Length: 224
Image (cartoon, rainbow, N blue to C red; front, side):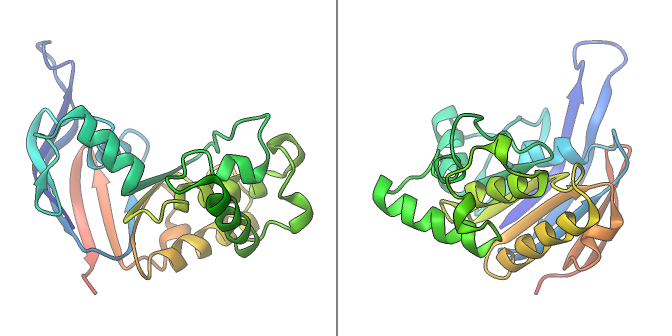
Protein backbone atom coordinates (compact mmCIF):
# COMPACT_ATOMS: atom_id res chain seq x y z
CA UNK A 1 0.00 0.00 0.00
CA UNK A 2 2.72 2.49 1.01
CA UNK A 3 6.25 2.75 -0.31
CA UNK A 4 8.72 5.40 0.78
CA UNK A 5 11.47 5.96 -1.77
CA UNK A 6 14.44 8.00 -0.57
CA UNK A 7 11.88 10.12 1.31
CA UNK A 8 13.44 13.30 2.66
CA UNK A 9 12.06 16.27 4.55
CA UNK A 10 14.30 19.28 5.17
CA UNK A 11 13.31 22.23 7.32
CA UNK A 12 15.05 25.57 6.74
CA UNK A 13 15.92 24.31 3.27
CA UNK A 14 17.02 27.80 2.16
CA UNK A 15 19.48 28.18 5.03
CA UNK A 16 23.10 27.07 5.07
CA UNK A 17 22.52 24.75 8.04
CA UNK A 18 19.66 22.48 7.04
CA UNK A 19 17.57 20.46 9.49
CA UNK A 20 16.67 16.95 8.31
CA UNK A 21 13.42 15.66 9.82
CA UNK A 22 13.54 12.70 7.39
CA UNK A 23 16.62 11.61 5.52
CA UNK A 24 16.58 9.10 2.64
CA UNK A 25 13.87 6.86 4.14
CA UNK A 26 13.02 3.65 2.29
CA UNK A 27 10.10 1.55 3.53
CA UNK A 28 7.32 -0.71 2.24
CA UNK A 29 4.12 -1.32 4.19
CA UNK A 30 1.28 -3.81 3.49
CA UNK A 31 -2.44 -3.18 2.94
CA UNK A 32 -3.41 -4.38 6.42
CA UNK A 33 -1.81 -4.82 9.81
CA UNK A 34 -0.62 -2.98 12.88
CA UNK A 35 2.55 -0.94 12.30
CA UNK A 36 4.32 0.65 15.25
CA UNK A 37 6.73 3.50 14.58
CA UNK A 38 8.99 4.06 17.59
CA UNK A 39 11.58 6.71 18.35
CA UNK A 40 12.46 9.53 20.74
CA UNK A 41 11.09 13.06 20.47
CA UNK A 42 12.52 14.85 17.46
CA UNK A 43 13.49 11.64 15.67
CA UNK A 44 11.28 12.36 12.65
CA UNK A 45 8.56 9.79 13.27
CA UNK A 46 5.71 12.33 13.35
CA UNK A 47 7.01 14.06 10.22
CA UNK A 48 7.01 10.65 8.56
CA UNK A 49 3.33 10.27 9.42
CA UNK A 50 2.46 13.79 8.25
CA UNK A 51 4.09 13.23 4.86
CA UNK A 52 2.50 9.80 4.40
CA UNK A 53 -0.93 11.24 5.22
CA UNK A 54 -0.49 14.23 2.83
CA UNK A 55 -0.47 16.79 5.66
CA UNK A 56 3.04 17.79 4.56
CA UNK A 57 5.00 17.50 1.32
CA UNK A 58 8.43 15.94 1.04
CA UNK A 59 11.35 18.06 -0.08
CA UNK A 60 12.98 15.06 -1.76
CA UNK A 61 12.21 11.50 -2.79
CA UNK A 62 8.68 10.17 -3.04
CA UNK A 63 5.88 8.35 -1.25
CA UNK A 64 3.75 5.96 -3.29
CA UNK A 65 0.25 5.11 -2.08
CA UNK A 66 -1.54 2.38 -4.02
CA UNK A 67 0.60 3.15 -7.05
CA UNK A 68 0.00 6.91 -6.84
CA UNK A 69 2.76 9.42 -6.13
CA UNK A 70 1.70 11.64 -3.23
CA UNK A 71 4.23 14.27 -4.28
CA UNK A 72 2.52 14.91 -7.59
CA UNK A 73 -1.15 15.08 -6.61
CA UNK A 74 -3.26 18.22 -6.37
CA UNK A 75 -4.49 19.81 -3.14
CA UNK A 76 -8.01 18.63 -3.98
CA UNK A 77 -6.77 15.04 -4.27
CA UNK A 78 -4.96 15.40 -0.94
CA UNK A 79 -8.15 16.56 0.75
CA UNK A 80 -10.07 13.73 -0.90
CA UNK A 81 -7.64 11.12 0.44
CA UNK A 82 -7.79 12.55 3.96
CA UNK A 83 -11.57 12.63 3.89
CA UNK A 84 -12.30 9.28 2.25
CA UNK A 85 -9.31 6.96 2.80
CA UNK A 86 -7.34 8.22 5.81
CA UNK A 87 -8.35 8.52 9.45
CA UNK A 88 -6.49 10.37 12.21
CA UNK A 89 -6.13 9.97 15.97
CA UNK A 90 -3.89 12.35 17.90
CA UNK A 91 -2.62 12.70 21.46
CA UNK A 92 -5.29 15.33 22.06
CA UNK A 93 -8.81 14.33 21.13
CA UNK A 94 -9.73 17.62 19.36
CA UNK A 95 -13.43 17.09 20.03
CA UNK A 96 -15.81 20.04 19.61
CA UNK A 97 -16.69 21.13 23.13
CA UNK A 98 -20.38 21.90 22.54
CA UNK A 99 -21.13 18.74 20.54
CA UNK A 100 -22.21 15.40 21.99
CA UNK A 101 -20.24 12.18 21.59
CA UNK A 102 -22.46 11.15 18.66
CA UNK A 103 -22.30 14.58 17.01
CA UNK A 104 -18.50 14.63 17.27
CA UNK A 105 -18.30 11.16 15.75
CA UNK A 106 -20.36 12.05 12.67
CA UNK A 107 -18.70 15.45 12.15
CA UNK A 108 -16.92 14.41 8.94
CA UNK A 109 -19.18 11.51 7.93
CA UNK A 110 -19.60 11.01 4.19
CA UNK A 111 -22.96 9.19 4.42
CA UNK A 112 -26.36 10.77 5.19
CA UNK A 113 -27.05 12.02 8.72
CA UNK A 114 -29.55 9.32 9.69
CA UNK A 115 -27.25 6.50 8.59
CA UNK A 116 -24.23 8.20 10.14
CA UNK A 117 -25.94 8.66 13.51
CA UNK A 118 -27.00 5.00 13.71
CA UNK A 119 -23.51 3.87 12.73
CA UNK A 120 -21.87 6.26 15.23
CA UNK A 121 -24.04 5.08 18.11
CA UNK A 122 -23.15 1.45 17.44
CA UNK A 123 -19.45 2.23 17.06
CA UNK A 124 -19.40 4.15 20.34
CA UNK A 125 -21.17 1.33 22.17
CA UNK A 126 -18.73 -1.20 20.68
CA UNK A 127 -15.75 0.87 21.81
CA UNK A 128 -16.97 1.10 25.41
CA UNK A 129 -19.10 4.25 25.60
CA UNK A 130 -22.29 3.63 27.55
CA UNK A 131 -25.70 4.42 26.07
CA UNK A 132 -26.24 7.08 28.74
CA UNK A 133 -23.02 8.80 27.60
CA UNK A 134 -23.85 9.11 23.90
CA UNK A 135 -25.46 12.53 24.35
CA UNK A 136 -22.81 13.91 26.70
CA UNK A 137 -20.43 16.68 25.63
CA UNK A 138 -16.65 16.14 26.02
CA UNK A 139 -16.52 18.07 29.30
CA UNK A 140 -18.78 15.44 30.87
CA UNK A 141 -16.61 12.51 29.70
CA UNK A 142 -13.37 11.14 31.13
CA UNK A 143 -10.08 11.38 29.25
CA UNK A 144 -10.31 7.75 28.18
CA UNK A 145 -13.88 8.20 26.98
CA UNK A 146 -12.97 11.31 24.98
CA UNK A 147 -10.13 9.46 23.25
CA UNK A 148 -12.47 6.58 22.40
CA UNK A 149 -14.89 9.05 20.82
CA UNK A 150 -11.96 10.43 18.81
CA UNK A 151 -11.15 6.91 17.60
CA UNK A 152 -14.77 6.29 16.61
CA UNK A 153 -14.73 9.57 14.66
CA UNK A 154 -11.51 8.51 12.90
CA UNK A 155 -13.10 5.19 11.92
CA UNK A 156 -16.43 6.70 10.86
CA UNK A 157 -15.74 6.55 7.12
CA UNK A 158 -14.03 3.14 7.30
CA UNK A 159 -10.64 4.56 6.28
CA UNK A 160 -8.18 2.26 4.56
CA UNK A 161 -5.38 3.75 6.68
CA UNK A 162 -5.65 4.91 10.28
CA UNK A 163 -2.83 7.16 11.48
CA UNK A 164 -2.43 7.49 15.25
CA UNK A 165 0.15 9.95 16.62
CA UNK A 166 0.87 9.30 20.32
CA UNK A 167 -2.79 8.24 20.84
CA UNK A 168 -2.28 7.10 24.45
CA UNK A 169 0.22 9.67 25.74
CA UNK A 170 -2.38 11.48 27.87
CA UNK A 171 -4.08 8.32 29.18
CA UNK A 172 -3.48 6.05 32.16
CA UNK A 173 -2.32 2.48 31.44
CA UNK A 174 -5.79 0.93 31.66
CA UNK A 175 -7.32 3.34 29.16
CA UNK A 176 -4.20 3.21 26.99
CA UNK A 177 -4.48 -0.54 26.52
CA UNK A 178 -8.24 -0.30 25.86
CA UNK A 179 -7.50 2.18 23.08
CA UNK A 180 -4.74 0.01 21.65
CA UNK A 181 -6.97 -3.08 21.72
CA UNK A 182 -9.49 -1.25 19.54
CA UNK A 183 -6.81 -0.08 17.11
CA UNK A 184 -5.36 -3.58 16.87
CA UNK A 185 -8.81 -5.01 16.15
CA UNK A 186 -9.25 -2.47 13.34
CA UNK A 187 -5.86 -3.47 11.90
CA UNK A 188 -7.15 -6.95 11.05
CA UNK A 189 -8.84 -5.53 7.96
CA UNK A 190 -7.11 -2.16 7.51
CA UNK A 191 -3.68 -0.59 7.95
CA UNK A 192 -3.07 1.08 11.31
CA UNK A 193 0.10 3.12 11.84
CA UNK A 194 0.83 4.12 15.43
CA UNK A 195 3.53 6.70 16.18
CA UNK A 196 4.85 6.51 19.73
CA UNK A 197 7.85 6.67 22.06
CA UNK A 198 6.29 4.02 24.34
CA UNK A 199 7.40 0.49 23.42
CA UNK A 200 4.74 -1.13 25.62
CA UNK A 201 1.80 -0.06 23.46
CA UNK A 202 3.25 -1.53 20.26
CA UNK A 203 4.49 -4.81 21.73
CA UNK A 204 1.95 -6.69 19.58
CA UNK A 205 2.66 -4.78 16.36
CA UNK A 206 3.00 -6.83 13.18
CA UNK A 207 5.77 -4.50 12.01
CA UNK A 208 7.95 -2.23 14.15
CA UNK A 209 9.84 0.64 12.56
CA UNK A 210 12.57 2.33 14.60
CA UNK A 211 13.36 5.93 13.67
CA UNK A 212 16.45 7.79 14.89
CA UNK A 213 17.75 11.18 13.76
CA UNK A 214 15.47 11.25 10.74
CA UNK A 215 16.51 7.82 9.50
CA UNK A 216 14.94 4.37 9.65
CA UNK A 217 17.28 2.49 11.97
CA UNK A 218 15.54 -0.90 11.93
CA UNK A 219 12.41 -2.70 10.72
CA UNK A 220 11.25 -5.88 12.43
CA UNK A 221 8.31 -8.10 11.60
CA UNK A 222 6.94 -8.57 8.13
CA UNK A 223 4.05 -8.47 5.72
CA UNK A 224 1.29 -10.88 6.61
